[in-house]
Length: 205
Ligand code: IMP
Ligand code: MG
Image (cartoon, rainbow, N blue to C red):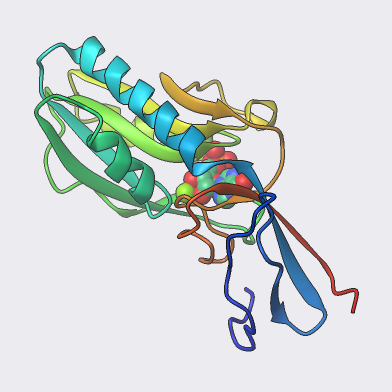
């Protein structure tokens, strides 16, 4: 866990798509480089919303967001779906350090409404190994939804260990650690409007 004490500089948006380095503790600097811009995200999310609207053709859908990373994506996606939409949220914890999954997933918060007989779209920020969504799908399927689909903004296909795929995927990305647009590193950077690659390195001066 990185101490937020000693933050000396806020994130600034610079031309050239490079965020200002963040010195969050002596000797360590976070370097953030934009991978997917807010304009690219907006265009893709609009496309995904159109597809969902067409696929469910007038039927109601329940978007179930995986807290907390999916909240920003869910908020934008929901406004691009022209159907009777309701929201619910689920929270899981996975053990391991901030950048590495341990493989164990635990349910921390279940949905509020029954999913039985409903069209469910599970909304997640990123599909990585697939462990999290495989676990959540199993939990939700036990309640017999009418349909269950997965919408993921990002997909690190090369990292997958579970046989799971997204039905609606925004962007396939390389095996880099990314933050922004809901995604965090130790709870930071969720508020960045772009998806950025995070590298933590030594301070050079
Ligand atoms: P999976 O269970 O390995 O598919 O991991 C999914 C979860 O890991 C996501 O919901 C994220 O919380 C987290 N995660 C995986 N890759 C990244 C990343 O590059 N940045 C931030 N979080 C990530
Ligand atoms: Mg997450």
